[in-house]
Image (cartoon, rainbow, N blue to C red; front, side):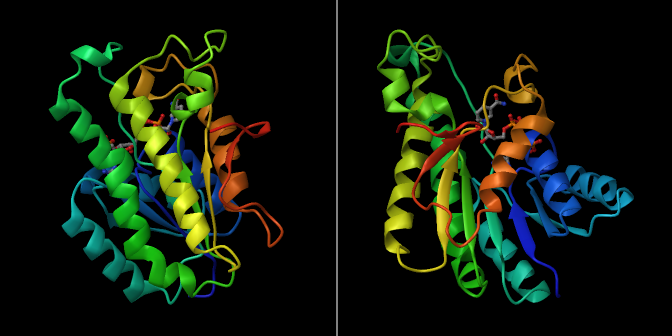
Length: 240
Ligand code: NAP
């Protein structure tokens, strides 16, 4: 396989699907990750109708066995992976931390934190074989401790412990992997796509998926002189 390759998790819809579409249009071969086979194949069909080369990869961020088999499936189809986008994410329970159950919180961490860690570890052998490997973790401004502790910030009122703290943890994961690979060509960053109309928020978001996927795709496409270990939104770097 000659083309550059990207794996995007949770890519059957929302920001993930649109990011797959935009990178596909840029000439990437898309490994379209989805936990549901029917939805994944449907999304692959839609991309192919637009002339994009794509293959469905079953990957459930909360299921280690699917992560291992996804890595094997991709390795059978390509010798290297240029980009990994950890996009799959779930949220948010109630807004009152004292009332959230630990089961709720654990299940969000499985998808938003433990999944991405395992997916990065499983894909690293292929990412290291790419000349300029890139990992983009789709985080959220709701994970910024700076925004969470600023009463004047627009995100201050959004206080779900499960979602917000899972994205804070994902940011930490980003920094630590970036440190491990500092000085190599592999770059890893976190991105806040911005409040976007998707199923995650019953389409109440104020941005389009086209706009927000553009923010994600830009970080996937950074060059040799691009950043690593940072947190970015549509306007540039944002505080942890
Ligand atoms: P979405 O439309 O609900 O899409 C979420 C995707 O994640 C779906 O494909 C979903 O698959 C998948 N997913 C859920 N659990 C999964 C699992 N266990 N394994 C694999 N895939 C799983 O939401 P979205 O807004 O596009 O969200 C994409 C990312 O952006 C998330 O990480 C989210 O936290 C982040 N984000 C979104 C906003 C926003 O305003 N929308 C803002 C900031 C950050 P199914 O169809 O099978 O459920």
